[in-house]
Length: 289
Image 1: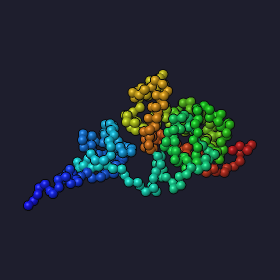
Image 2: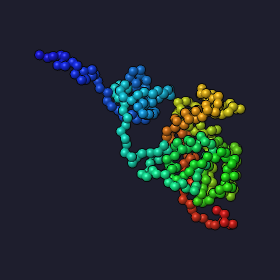
Image 3: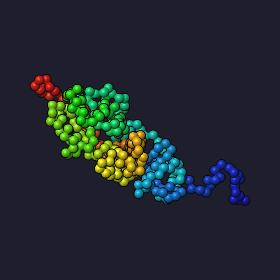
Image 4: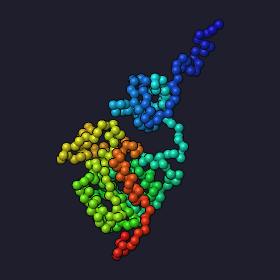
């Protein structure tokens, strides 16, 4: 006789009998999934710990735990962490392939100077691994106005070149006038000054990486960072508020894809400039380099 209840209704797995099992799918960036419980549909933009972040077509972002509860093409799936990939194809945050030997080299005489603490932190976040591998030191320059003083104290040469990154390097600006003067001067051959067109390095982070459509427009006469915080609805009453705002912005940068190309190209240019092997040239009068 056929026993419709089976021999043991309390045996392990009785709850799952007759239900459709969820296929396990590795969570990958840009994979589009639907949340079964409420229909929220979006692409995976970040995987942190045991959570996955989804962004829908309107730019709204939500965080969900990995595991079951998702759907792809109407079929239930469980999102799982990807297995470790072969180390030979790993990339740095800048997109470069990781070298087999990742120990930092002894610092080269050449270095990169950046105008601003936040600029230095962003460069470190994206290019830090590459710079350590090349032995390139990044130094904080309090202002491009002080560049002449630094060059006089520690003159550059073929073996010690300076790459300088400044904010708001646009035609007619103070920064552009200083850059032109250095290029025409005695140190011009061994110094390269580049910059991005934005008011501040904050704008070098893509708005989409922060979940916003665009950076707010700050009225003239308003401190720029304060205006940005207020425009985004963030606290901006004291310096600690500005510092927390920047740390939030910086936390959203995980790879070069989170940074505007106007900065990417300029930093890569400086790295190439300071790591290019010194080329012997004709001696100049007076022993100048």
